[in-house]
Image (cartoon, rainbow over all chains, first blue to last red; front, side, top):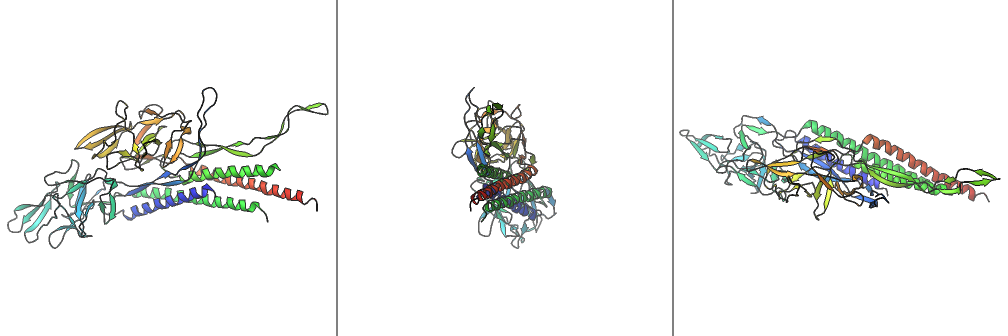
Length: 272
Length: 266
């Protein structure tokens, strides 16, 4: 059968995946702390019909290889870890990380996960939690942060991550826990996204380095209270990519119909 | 009957042309892809009458030849610059000019690519999407060891290929991404995954500093789009389809003529 049919099928499939990723980006255009993904394609193996030949000075020129490519394949789906813009909410338990780094949380299953979404809340016990999943926010010592409502009337969180509670009785400030933990990775784009705005360490992210409390945040990283990080999806980019994906898909489907017509032509060669 | 084999040769050649157009279109959105172009040649002609024969004492001029169709001769690569697509990613880099990046594949071999979708992996290597390690050189042009970028943040790539990153709150230099040029880049062998390999006719790779004449410059936070022109390929598609149709018509006409000859004698 024709190579062009299968080249075109590979093109169709890859453009479909591109569209899937664009769809997911647009669906998360208003998701707090969401990091967009993008798809890149690469060439597939080429079939060599004639190899290259070496030139001989003064006698024969070299010839170039003659190769037919066999279509495209998915090269990567990259997570683009750029900062999202800041959305001021005024809620004192909402946190935004300015600069690189991730919040560290412990899920209800006991797993350590990382997130850029800082829409936190206090639960009935005064623990700082991610209200969507009940995962607990960890301090730099790896413990949960409890602002006991029976002891403290109010609290604030400093840009350095230090949590201060003010006593109900006389308003004395008390430092609670070892400061909100921020983790950095050698390769943050290598983290595995596990849903719920959470990431997990992968083989290619490298191990987490924790900051906070006694270890100050790395330069360029600080906490902003009363604000959230918006999604870094850029709609103009996504819509442009959508056009590229649609037109690429269309062109590949045309290659299939033309290949089909040509095969029909071959079949019609032989009259009964 | 030459018509049948001439038509068949045409069908075969147009099929290869369609394969090339199909591959170009499948790669219409492949980073750094360079479009292919089929090139046909006429097949050896059969001489019906040699030159300079005499007919009734008078010389008859030219040779009388009947061609035997077409065969595919070469599939060239069009290394025309692709458009720059800006991205937000600091590890993305595009070549504006004729150079290539050099990468070391998993089996230790060298390969060349125009796809600058790089990343710093967990071991501190600058690598491409397949984990092939990008060659970095120091100021003297010596190849630097792998894994230098371990634990760094905020990678930046300059237009001269200079790689810098933050380590312990300081911006440090991690060498340069050199560009590679070839005596005959059209001779490079396509290896898939956006990689090219050296062939007998490409000549050896030569390092050049990005930004110098001939090699081109780098643009960071951008990727080079495929240089496939959809309009031109769609036109090619129509042409190929029609040429294929005409060649197949020749075969069926030849078949018919043969049928007529066969039925001359009842």
